[in-house]
Image (tube, rainbow, N blue to C red; front, side):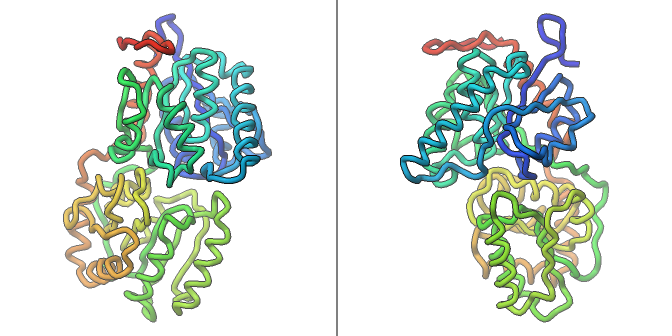
Length: 398
């Protein structure tokens, strides 16, 4: 049990700006299933709890306050748009300051990029211990110019602790983090227990990707490579993921592309699925094909934990987990020809698929969700025990 110096359980307020089933939101729900601290998730006002409905009736309270926050990064736009966005963030910060659950917390944990902005503002005003979960690459091309400015000049310099989901992510955040901040790399919980033995069919029947439908996730790259490797065969491609964050137009484009490639009868768009273990279990080859360096790639960790023959885009966090030819195959991001070659290689070599499946289960550093939650709890405890940082001074750890 996590106890503060006053003899009571540690109280952590977890902030998120969205209720859609994105990677950050799913990771937070999984984290809280194993937590050893008192917790409240604070979300903007809205009609639906979305993915956080799973917490209702459990050990974590859910509070709503502040204006609705739109999904997506803060992209350059009109001056009016910047001003409206800034007012929305300021309104969220004011609402937090007035919120009872926020005021009662010992530690504030910002789970998403946007919530970190208004969480930093409110934490500074109330002198709260502030922990930032860095899940995105800290770069203006990823966050948008305005979002990057807030994150690099306000959020990270305000953080008493930074938890990054990969070394690649931490590298982009490190230049903006205070020297005295507690900095850690802890992968996100994936909701999957590592299996004891890899299972494999002799032939390849299903290829698949578990990922939110979004242009940078590379579903279009996989469609083109799949068509080159398997068009006209009995092999099926399953694209498992929903259209969060206004990506419906991209989904329609993918459906049109499948028709143009002549593989529409071989492709299944499943939409969001709750039971990814079952979905991945049906796949013979699992693919990660993001076209830009991904911060972590929870799907990659899920593939490895389930002992699957896996192809991974060789960039960012996912490349930290896969050694080519040992526990998966690496392919250059956006390289259709390279991905086609990897698919053909795996389809034609059952022994290689079996060897990679065994290697996947032996991947060093794969943690279960309970251990990941314990490591987060240790970070929260250490931050709560610190002398609080004051603007213009250097704090001390203890």
